[in-house]
Length: 240
Image (cartoon, rainbow, N blue to C red):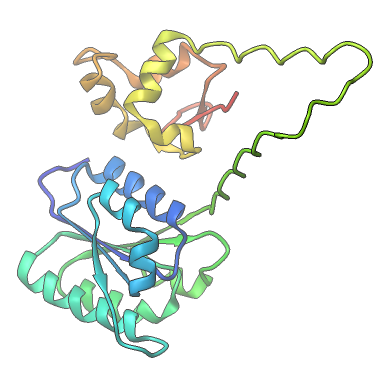
């Protein structure tokens, strides 16, 4: 993690789902620490649909009122070049599964930027991924079904005993819960590089200055999986 680098996050909000946008922000923050520019390019309808999400993630929506198949993509590309010239970021992260951004990626690299891509799993072609310096596919997590409304009809008589309620899930060990509080992206199924976890664990007072994040995770093998086995460099939460 290098907080001295300027990082720019540009989101094609008409191309990826809301939960992928949320995952992308978490992933970029975990890797870079700070995101200096956060913009989402979309139609007015999408802006209203995602308004709560954009507010919670401090994303500035750039609304495109023009009609046409690629009008939002063109608006994002033009704005990207203007921003790079003005802000001089070291890293630009493009969130989209659209192959049309290949010329933009090449131009941003010519301007001295490292260009990362984030797309929705199953939507991005392999040829498109090769254009970026690094590309990550994020899964689309379906929204949970809303709880059914209570049945207001008169209660029906049932024979036999009532089915016993399921026991509550056991509480996590305190240290495990504190680790997840420090790195909530682990709860979302993300696999994190170990070298990016130490700083957050120290900030949460879970590690001393010379402490090892690897040893901390190894204390809880039922909850955290390290890989590869011999010389681990990644960690993932084992969902219970």
